[in-house]
Length: 113
Image 1: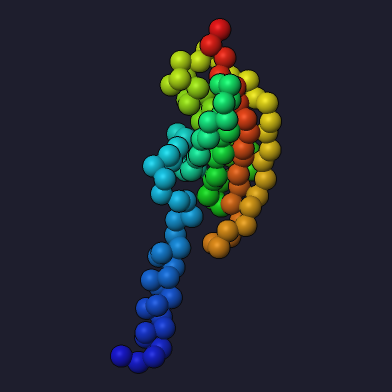
Image 2 (image 1 turned 60 degrees about the vertical axis):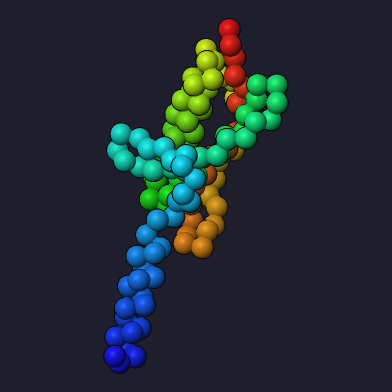
Protein backbone atom coordinates (compact mmCIF):
# COMPACT_ATOMS: atom_id res chain seq x y z
CA UNK A 1 0.00 0.00 0.00
CA UNK A 2 1.26 3.43 -0.79
CA UNK A 3 1.74 6.05 1.88
CA UNK A 4 -0.90 8.25 0.30
CA UNK A 5 -3.58 5.55 0.54
CA UNK A 6 -2.63 4.78 4.16
CA UNK A 7 -2.86 8.46 5.04
CA UNK A 8 -6.30 8.77 3.44
CA UNK A 9 -7.52 5.64 5.23
CA UNK A 10 -6.22 6.93 8.57
CA UNK A 11 -7.97 10.29 8.09
CA UNK A 12 -11.25 8.57 7.21
CA UNK A 13 -11.07 6.37 10.31
CA UNK A 14 -10.17 9.34 12.50
CA UNK A 15 -13.12 11.26 11.09
CA UNK A 16 -15.48 8.40 11.86
CA UNK A 17 -14.20 8.13 15.42
CA UNK A 18 -14.78 11.85 15.95
CA UNK A 19 -18.42 11.84 14.82
CA UNK A 20 -19.86 11.64 18.32
CA UNK A 21 -18.97 14.28 20.87
CA UNK A 22 -21.09 12.84 23.66
CA UNK A 23 -19.63 10.68 26.40
CA UNK A 24 -21.33 7.33 26.89
CA UNK A 25 -22.68 7.65 30.42
CA UNK A 26 -26.06 6.04 29.91
CA UNK A 27 -27.74 9.33 30.79
CA UNK A 28 -28.39 10.64 27.31
CA UNK A 29 -31.60 12.56 26.72
CA UNK A 30 -33.09 13.68 23.44
CA UNK A 31 -35.94 15.87 22.31
CA UNK A 32 -38.58 15.19 19.67
CA UNK A 33 -36.23 16.50 16.97
CA UNK A 34 -33.54 13.97 17.85
CA UNK A 35 -31.10 16.50 19.33
CA UNK A 36 -28.94 14.71 21.88
CA UNK A 37 -27.55 15.92 25.16
CA UNK A 38 -25.61 14.11 27.88
CA UNK A 39 -26.49 14.83 31.49
CA UNK A 40 -25.00 14.34 34.93
CA UNK A 41 -26.72 14.56 38.33
CA UNK A 42 -25.04 14.96 41.70
CA UNK A 43 -26.82 14.91 45.07
CA UNK A 44 -25.86 17.89 47.24
CA UNK A 45 -28.00 17.16 50.31
CA UNK A 46 -31.22 18.73 51.62
CA UNK A 47 -33.18 17.66 48.53
CA UNK A 48 -30.84 19.64 46.27
CA UNK A 49 -29.23 18.28 43.14
CA UNK A 50 -26.70 19.70 40.71
CA UNK A 51 -27.73 19.00 37.13
CA UNK A 52 -25.43 19.49 34.16
CA UNK A 53 -26.56 19.02 30.57
CA UNK A 54 -23.94 18.93 27.82
CA UNK A 55 -25.12 19.23 24.25
CA UNK A 56 -23.41 18.38 21.02
CA UNK A 57 -21.90 21.18 18.97
CA UNK A 58 -24.85 20.75 16.60
CA UNK A 59 -27.39 22.11 19.10
CA UNK A 60 -28.79 25.50 18.22
CA UNK A 61 -28.66 28.42 20.63
CA UNK A 62 -31.19 28.04 23.42
CA UNK A 63 -31.71 24.33 22.89
CA UNK A 64 -29.40 23.25 25.72
CA UNK A 65 -31.46 25.41 28.12
CA UNK A 66 -34.60 23.57 27.01
CA UNK A 67 -32.81 20.26 27.54
CA UNK A 68 -31.85 21.38 31.07
CA UNK A 69 -35.47 22.19 31.97
CA UNK A 70 -36.63 18.90 30.45
CA UNK A 71 -34.01 16.91 32.38
CA UNK A 72 -34.81 18.72 35.65
CA UNK A 73 -38.54 18.06 35.24
CA UNK A 74 -38.02 14.38 34.36
CA UNK A 75 -35.51 13.78 37.15
CA UNK A 76 -37.50 15.46 39.92
CA UNK A 77 -40.68 13.79 38.69
CA UNK A 78 -39.06 10.37 39.16
CA UNK A 79 -38.25 11.38 42.74
CA UNK A 80 -41.91 12.14 43.40
CA UNK A 81 -41.49 15.90 43.53
CA UNK A 82 -44.52 18.06 42.77
CA UNK A 83 -42.27 20.79 41.39
CA UNK A 84 -38.68 22.01 41.53
CA UNK A 85 -36.96 25.27 42.40
CA UNK A 86 -33.91 26.58 40.61
CA UNK A 87 -31.27 28.02 42.97
CA UNK A 88 -28.33 28.56 40.63
CA UNK A 89 -28.03 28.44 36.87
CA UNK A 90 -25.41 29.10 34.24
CA UNK A 91 -24.99 28.20 30.61
CA UNK A 92 -22.29 28.68 28.07
CA UNK A 93 -19.92 27.07 25.65
CA UNK A 94 -16.97 24.88 26.60
CA UNK A 95 -14.06 23.75 24.49
CA UNK A 96 -13.52 20.06 23.83
CA UNK A 97 -11.02 18.18 21.73
CA UNK A 98 -13.60 17.99 18.96
CA UNK A 99 -14.79 21.58 19.09
CA UNK A 100 -17.07 23.82 21.09
CA UNK A 101 -20.01 22.32 23.00
CA UNK A 102 -22.86 24.03 24.82
CA UNK A 103 -23.64 23.27 28.44
CA UNK A 104 -26.17 24.29 31.07
CA UNK A 105 -25.89 23.55 34.77
CA UNK A 106 -27.75 24.50 37.85
CA UNK A 107 -28.84 23.50 41.33
CA UNK A 108 -32.44 22.38 41.66
CA UNK A 109 -34.38 21.63 44.82
CA UNK A 110 -37.09 18.99 44.99
CA UNK A 111 -40.35 20.37 46.43
CA UNK A 112 -42.73 17.69 47.68
CA UNK A 113 -45.72 19.96 48.43
